[in-house]
Image (cartoon, rainbow, N blue to C red; front, side, top):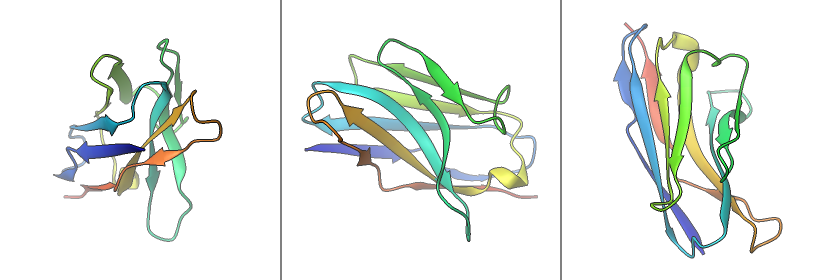
Length: 118
């Protein structure tokens, strides 16, 4: 089993920055894609950014140029650097990962709240 532990959420003013972190613990050998999703009140969960083990990245159009995803394969850690934050970025952010050793696997963290407000 894989557990994902997130940190770094909080309250920030519009235009500010936050950095989210997620560490994988447990049976992490074989972890492939890691990423971040978010869910705002009354909305569906959506992909924010994803990074493969080889470093290929994908971003939602709404965050391109403002957010940067990175990872450390040895430490099973993924970060999301969020700059120029907007009120629309307010949501619970969830870390996500899958494993090549477990077909169909889809692991989630507990979520961390990000609130962008003046």
